Length: 197
Image (cartoon, rainbow, N blue to C red; front, side, top):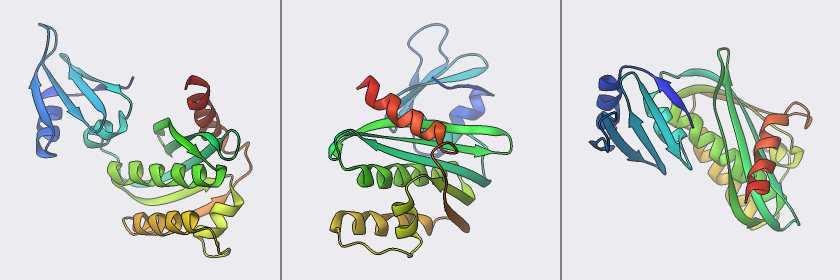
């Protein structure tokens, strides 16, 4: 549950400018509440607490992010195909900006890897980053996106098209295959989502 220390009046204005519906608080301590993208923000005197399945939707609006980010992504499928989940972490020189995970139903491991990359790109875009250094531990996905491998699987081809469409939102990007140890946090998040399902 992210806690954002900020000027809550300015935060309310940013959310309103983004078209988010804002209501009065439910208690004497709550200044206001806003719901957006599967999350609810509750404002107190000097902070906003974000709750819900996708807090990054509200965090992105309230953040001052931009510039370069390192993005780690991972998908996991138990059974291949089987129950699947994704995890992602976005890092800048200031540390972790946001991270998240969620279950995605029943898919193959490769589909889960693509889903993780798509979600990570959407979150990075919402935060306003210009340049991304993307890192994943699936050599297949990395090489398909970079155009080094082709695929006969229509689902994976469709994912690759979606990824390239999302990459157009950034000024510059790179995509690197890394060992699982380097991608440990995203892997952990994906598996935590499966364990909690």
